[in-house]
Image 1: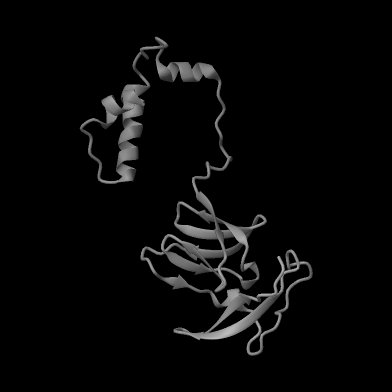
Image 2: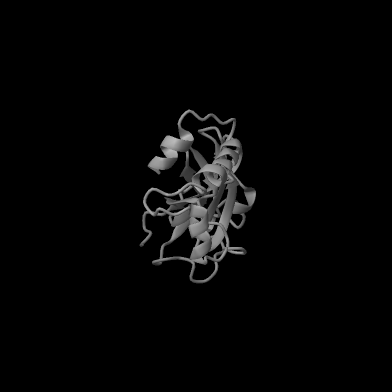
Length: 181
């Protein structure tokens, strides 16, 4: 890394990352790989040919996504980078894996299944809701929504309430005081 810092980066300017990558590839092919290496006393491009390495064609690129976990709040959202993003209501109270891709896509994962997708916002303080994440919630009287058998963990009992928020009717899930977890 020191060789690259002192021989490639020093005094170099680039208009963009793409321009810098193009300059680096040109420098690698015309300077770095054709000189005699100080430690091995071999020309890197010649030594590489002698290694007999095989290309990784067809193999996926290394995943540079950022991974973290978030607990789903009672309003069916997770907090991420100063904003709140909705997830299906059945995950309230659970810790889910959150993946931020290099393309700025937020993927919320439960047991290897992506359960929500959002484009990461550049602003802060926003709430992004997808109406489908709230489908299946009962309106009106508190009661249990339809959940697949076995989806309640630890025998938790839930009471669903409808509250009127700034954006109109917004279902929210409130755990009853008598819930056992």
